[in-house]
Amino acid sequence: MAKNQYHHHHHNNNISSSQFSLHFCYVLFTLALISSIPFLYFSINPCKAQNLNFFSSKAAADPPSFSGHLDSLPFAWNHLTFSSNPPPKRLNIALFVKKWPRGDRAGGLERHALTLHLALAARGHATHVFTVYPGARPPPELSPPNLHYHFSAPTRSGGLDQGLAWQQFLAANSTRAFDVIHTESVGLHHFHARNLTNVAVSWHGIAYECVHSDIAQDLARAPGEPRPVKLKSIIADRVFKVIEEVKFFDDYAHHVATSDHVGDILRRIYMIPQERVHVILNGVDEKIFKHDPSRGLAFRRKHGVPDSAKLVLGMSGRLVKDKGHPIMVEALKQILRENALLLKDVYLLVAGDGPWGDRYRELGKNMLVLGPLDRLVLSDFYNAIDVFVHPTLRAQGLDQTVLEAMLSGKPVMVARFAGITESAIVGPEMGYVFSPKVVQVKENLYRVIKDGRDVLSKKGEVAKQRALKLFTASKMAAAFERMFLCISNEEYCRYPLPSD
Ligand SMILES: *[C@@H]1O[C@H](CO)[C@@H](O)[C@H](O)[C@H]1NC(C)=O
Ligand SMILES: *[C@@H]1O[C@H](CO)[C@@H](O)[C@H](O)[C@H]1NC(C)=O
Image 1: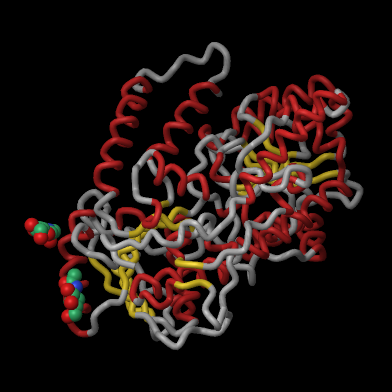
Image 2 (image 1 turned 90 degrees about the vertical axis):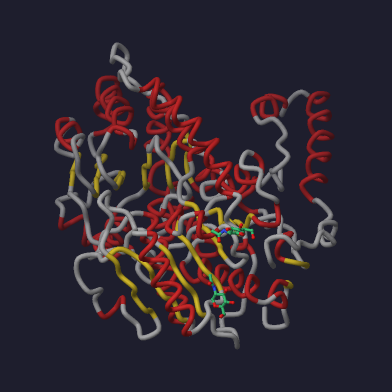
């Protein structure tokens, strides 16, 4: 599967069931017009080409089964099943990542690198990590014998020293040539990637997604709050950043989108040929994040949530403006004003902290801001809540917190950013989707409270089933492994293999 030699002979092997259901949908629409009863439903749910299964929504629908060359796979690799046995070929992988996690807290990109390459190491592959020295040797659990670290001092701006990392890479490569090079975002500069056919870059936030965030954030300004002086130039620069990215992204042979939405943008806006874009959805550690009500109960009691609580809402992350807290606080305020009694036995647990922490505390004693939690405690937190609320206005890639909540069996109430709503919370049977405006947040909070614990736990079960199928670390690692194998040896590009 090299950059400039693609095969196009497999593209006709899937009869499009979405086309079929689209036609079917219009027939139904016409019938509905005649019979006029379900018309209201149709008029607010226009037929949608991607919606594979019209009545039971996308959630229940599996993509059609696939066989053929993996570079023509029309949906995320996570939908495929792969052998759980490690392959006979053990890969030698180079990983470029600008930061390596120290301790328990890590950003999305570093967490992705760590989760993935620990899983690959456990399957017998060797990974050489080229990264900035994190300030201390990684602890034993992050240092299996087949994970080799090549640290370097950071550049003055805190980045990865490209010249040095490249020299380290060449030295390691001359001892034993790498089968494949994985770069997390621009960890490996496109200048070095340009002539290599065995590079795969995974994206965790691209400028085009930021444009959407910029728009949402400006619209979320409170009435009377002035627009930041620099915003005009920031937004203009952002569009030029997209154009720059469109130019240099082409230097990377293979692209991994961590959400379906980004896969679409890479093909459509960034003009990368279909067969070089692979969608491998994020996965999170299913051994840490799992459904365990007894741990949830213990966590509630520990934090003073009475057993009589009617409902527990949960949020996590930094409590800053662009995570949507202004609209969330305003929505809660309005509910308190309109119907304080409704919130009487409703609790809010916030795992995180930041400038907006006090605004939550000011809303009442049921609003508990707990500060940042370690991962094990965080998994108790997810078990303690009834619904995970994620109002962020800066959604990029596929947020791991949403996947952690789903794996823990919790429904998610989330702002409508396509990364999440096209891949994770794809239907009302697993959560709630709102456009990031106060009035819609409020409406959804009312609905969540009205639905209550029983409905929420049913939705949580659907969310969990979806997550167990698509969003586990082992599924993500199996998909990456197969893609790396396919990059290094064409034979692995067929699907299914006898071992699948
Ligand atoms: C790595 O080593 C292999 C085998 O010697 C060589 O063909 C390849 O060009 C080297 N890669 C780079 C980037 O130098
Ligand atoms: C890539 O290949 C081109 C053409 O063969 C060559 O001119 C250029 O110097 C190479 N670039 C790098 C970064 O190796």
